[in-house]
Image (tube, rainbow, N blue to C red; front, side):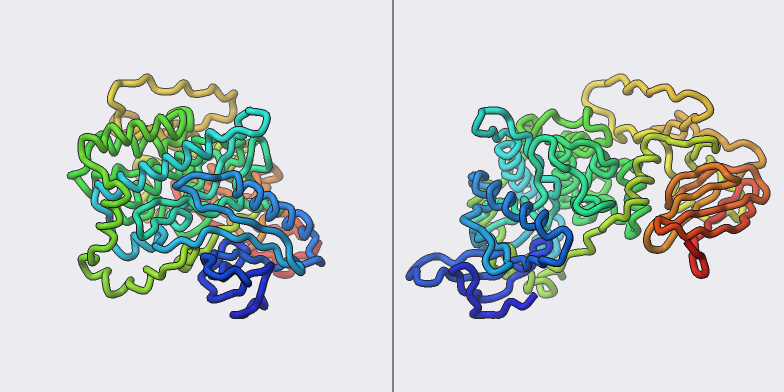
Length: 491
């Protein structure tokens, strides 16, 4: 981007670059010719007329401005104005002084319980307002943020929590999952299972992210730290959230139950809405105590304790939208997203079903990095009152997805047929449709496909028409992994 200090954009003089917001740069800016006017955070994005998505990008930016101007709440960043100036889309936002939750975690480590509860109550108050917004006709807008994460939640120096960046929020039945073809919208480590599966979203998808954020505030560790796209998708779909009390035994049992309910794989098992979640958190706060904004501000002013203090003082940089260096945003190729859907639905045509690892792996077998069962994992912690397990949908033969047990002692994993092994098929860059012995196995990545021991013919068709073939031998009780190589392949 060609922006420079002291340059003017739409009546604002750029003072200092303070971060990025998606595809835009964020600057501290001063209104020109308005003596005494407060500085703003100016979000500016170049518009490329040669880009086929040019008009759609401009339209989304304008929708973000219109939506932001309707979001008026003490726990939401204020949108002041916006528009297009010389092929630059811009929006002027309230300038916040403080730090994001991501920066706060880097600076302080795990938060004390009253601080985490205070942040959670304000965050849920913001979502209660957002999810309850109605249109001019009085009908609910069904607004979903879709990208809640620690770097999109700000804590001002006054102790006020602000939700920022509604750039990919959606109203009602809008395009909830994609930007360009094959790209999942949202920061994947905090995406709900239904978001990964590209299902329609509702307010409970935001509550899922709140559960992960609060868990991270209390443990200072990511709930799903996997680095690869495939492993992360696998964890989101199947791996249960670990109770926070495993790391902090002093935490109340009721808090762990709430966190596990918020982050439940099945949205029907989560609190009904932000108000219900906030009432449960408030009842807990009345017993344990929670910081009000003034108390949170006083705690923020206290010197950080421990070795994090000196190493992270630079993260306290003041201007509001000055975000910490972001982890990669996990753009997902279409094949990975489709694979997640197929895995979630247990789709298989003529081939035997995918299954979880056996109880005891054969000696010398490689570690199974991606064991993908075919049913959502139950809540790892029992609720306050016993609940009957959800009914499992019956799947017609020959597809027989295995149920993931709550505890191996109660429900041992189903053993694989004698003389069978597993096949994983991956590909670097892009995706390909895979068939084994002439039968469709779905798009890459293919995880733990159960096949009879012996040689098999593997064929893959890339999206540009290139085709590659190879022979692979599956050994009984062992796992084979093939990484596709299209060098020399022709369309």
